Image (cartoon, rainbow, N blue to C red; front, side):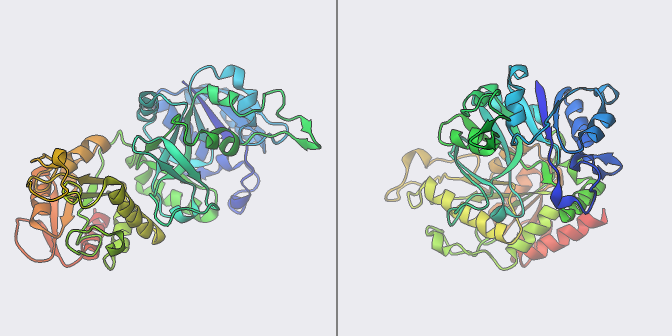
Length: 438
């Protein structure tokens, strides 16, 4: 599979770090950002690379040459004039005969590309977008998708968005079918020509990707792996620190992950009994700060919650999804995010008015059983022996122990837990301190 890396941007926002070289050539741990990208691709078998260049192109071409010194094969497309961020793709259309990876050269990442491509092929769409939660969804491009991951809406940071939304941010990594290049209404010959006194350009998001919303042909690939833009001085310093701490490579899902599993009611949000009304959902004091500490530790923050209100017919799947959107939105406003939400909709006891019969059975996922944790471990390559389950009840502790996790109880009682605290924040502070000492 070919990989196209777009490296033509000027990088004006980060010019204070380096103004005399292209942004992809700024060094992190002694190597240009682009070299880190190429190494990540090469190690996973993606060695056929096309780099589109423009601003200070000679710096990139002289450093990497034909790629042979880096174990890959590199060719270049030079933009003599600005063609828009998809113009070069249209010019390269004859070379793009099969699905290809499309990446930005100024992103810092380390992801399992084979897993990403396998998901794309499984879905059978024209486009798959790498999506992830981040600490600032309120000023990021957010995607809204259906239960199958098909993109329904694409919201830029300027767009009006729903009151509550999932923290699902477009990370700028793509798998594309070349067929989409034929659907944008601009031919390769037209790009760069004058039309009505203006140079014809092609915009990837606006003219190629956004029109696929609602078509069932563009999908989200949700992953907690490390992808960050280093386009500002502050973000550059942050990714340098993450590299130094080993967090970039560690989050690649080919490596075993450490997770903190969190109960929901009484742990993240205030306990109100069976939560049926979204207006009753309020974060516990300090919960966002706690989740943020877990994020900063390099661990995955994953909710695992029993929701028998579904089986009892008191809350629909859609209503539960909206409650969880509210949880993600409130956390996101404070710079915290969840890497996954797992819930059990079942309930073993029958006889409730309005209950859903097909959900009334003794399942393997309802805590105190470990099913939700085991499913997350399988999907996200989690090492349960290095992970924690945190909750406010006996079922949480028993589920964690059944999965082989360490456990922490919020509140009082002795259920064999490893730690007892009075709040999620108290746990997170102790957890972060212990991890910092290792």
